[in-house]
Length: 75
Image (cartoon, rainbow, N blue to C red; front, side, top):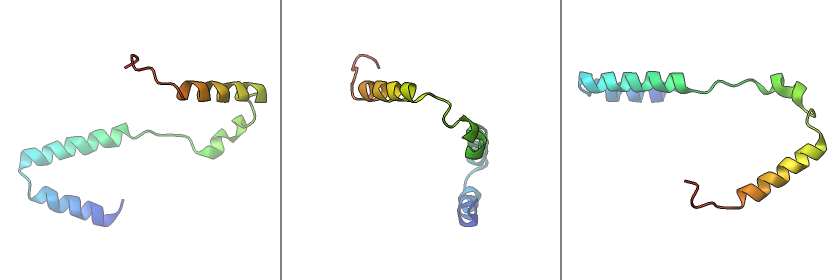
């Protein structure tokens, strides 16, 4: 973490009432838990080329067709 950001957050916290400080603590804990954890790319390399090119082509076409349309009633 960038020390200047942590220092600035700490300075802001010092001026807040304890209840707001507690809310910030809960918020930062929730953010830390919600951070997605992924696999490094090198662990996924063994999957490279495992999808047949014909299927890749079909998926690409479906994505292009589906992404270029708006269904206003969907949401």
